[in-house]
Length: 305
Image (tube, rainbow, N blue to C red; front, top):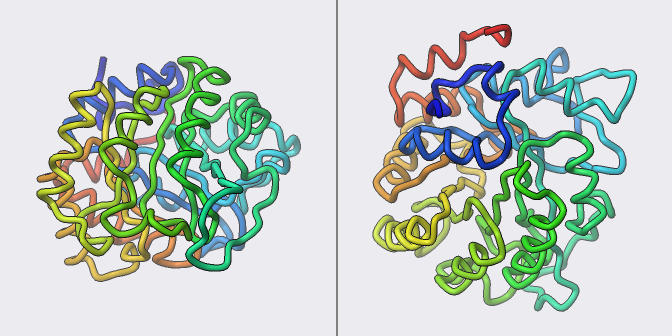
């Protein structure tokens, strides 16, 4: 199995979820995932946010605010909306995933919560749509003010594994409180939550990156990543606090802290500009964790390779 950072479009096209997991693991902490808005006007309307993120060095693209019942990616025109994900993957030559949100009706709200459209909620039916649309992975997490709890994530992972089988990678966890009382700061995700997520079938556990959430340190994250690895899963350390719009030095510090904590996947969020990290910060992050050689090759390689 190739390392993911060495894979090209032709390699990605042949991978199922477990092969993708192996390729990430073989890359030894040098994989960049960029989260971008699927909706809204792109920064530069001539290209989608996903294309822009891929051009600046992202290995994996995660679509946020994507409605599986009304599939569309702003900046990408297709005649058949059911083919939008396949078309995007052909254009960028990267694995593409989607956020679904396991909203908990019984969540104790810490703030006024938003009401989400059915196509963004995590359910057996929306997971089936994820599979039909051709996504390579699904991320079960919560945007701000959504009422997503760890309890709801756990039960949804089980549904996801039953629906998706081994074809798709399952990422699960929280990068901030998602508006839920008692699940913020150092209490966002506990060791018990991690164990429950992996037991339910998650391949990758999402945690906040050290330095992004109050009280989350390198030392504490290192212990939780070690637990994740002992359980046979991979870790994703996320910037979900708009720091993707900070200066490049801050990005490099977060990147190296994540490296020291043992991240398998480095996530950079979608709020630097509207719906995407500052593109130069994606590149700065990439150079910090894997140098110019791998970064420039990822940026320059043709999708025809």
